[in-house]
Length: 199
Image 1 (tube, rainbow, N blue to C red):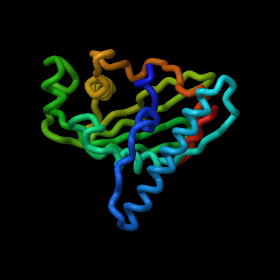
Image 2: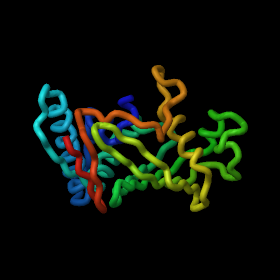
Image 3: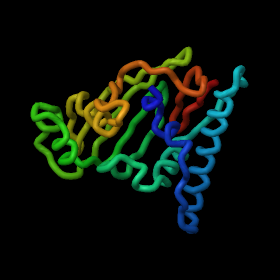
């Protein structure tokens, strides 16, 4: 179930890659380090028998800096330059470049990926709504586009299942299935460019 947690929260326990010393990279490194510290504080607070009531704000700049700081081997193979945008009312937008040939080779011939008249590495974008409350979350996918063309929502489910496979979950997981929030998080509120994690 923990694999259903927001990507950055799952990865927060890993190491942050070092950036070069350029001003832009230094700013990105500061954002990545700030997010890592916030997630560690959330995790530590969540381990307490009676966690402190706390609200932690994170920005999409921090999330994207953290993702970009990860070593390439910590990102799913074939997934390039993932980006997240936090929007009001629980809405989230995610985009990345995806290797459709690798996905197609791993899926059944009648899968959504196999039926796409596209190949190679293409931009994929998905928009969804994250609803949370009382320690439970659920994501509803609103739209998915590949190279700017709308495709069935099942496409993003196949992508997530493909990238989330593990020994414990050989089929991945259902992206839209309800899940329990980790670290005794009660809810997540969003505004443009920012999410507030409530414990």
